Image (cartoon, rainbow, N blue to C red):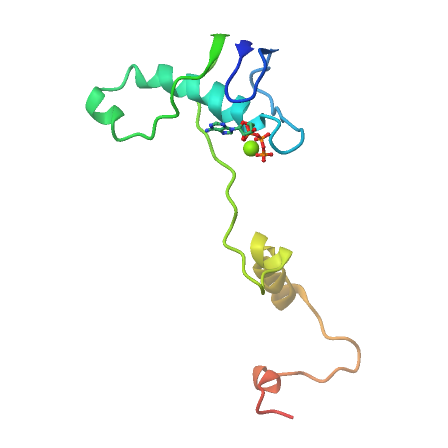
Length: 131
Ligand SMILES: Nc1ncnc2c1ncn2[C@@H]1O[C@H](COP(=O)(O)OP(=O)(O)OP(=O)(O)O)[C@@H](O)[C@H]1O
Ligand SMILES: [Mg+2]
C-alpha cells in the first residue's frame, strides 16, 4: 500500500499493490514507472532492510535513497533488477541481442533435416575458398 508518492514527477500517487502476484507498470516514457517501482517501492524496502545491516556493510551497498512518499505499508524485502540497454552494434539483430539466435542454431543443428534431394554439405562447403 502506497500513499502520497511524490518521487521525481509523481503527483501524490496512491496505489495498492497485491503481494504474490506479477504486477506490471505501463505508460509512456518519462511518466514515472521507474520512479514508482525503483525510486519509491524498492528504495523504501531497501532502506528498511538496511536498518538491520551493520553500518560497515551498509556502506558497501549502493543505496537508493529515501523516497518522497507519505506512507508505505506491507513491503517485503525487495530485490531490484534494473532495465539496461544491451551492447548492440550495427550488426546486431533481434536474434543476436536476445541470444535466441544461438538457441535456434543449436536447434537446427540437432533437429534440422535436409530438404529432399539436397546432397550433404560439409563445413568446408561454406568456406570462401569453395566455389
Ligand atoms: N534521479 C532523478 N532526478 C530527477 N528527476 C528524475 C530522476 N529520475 C527520473 N527523473 C524524472 O522523473 C520523470 C519520470 O522518470 P522515470 O524514469 O520514472 O520514467 P519512466 O516511466 O520509468 O520512463 P522510461 O519508460 O523511459 O523508463 C522524468 O521526467 C525524469 O526526467
Ligand atoms: Mg523507467
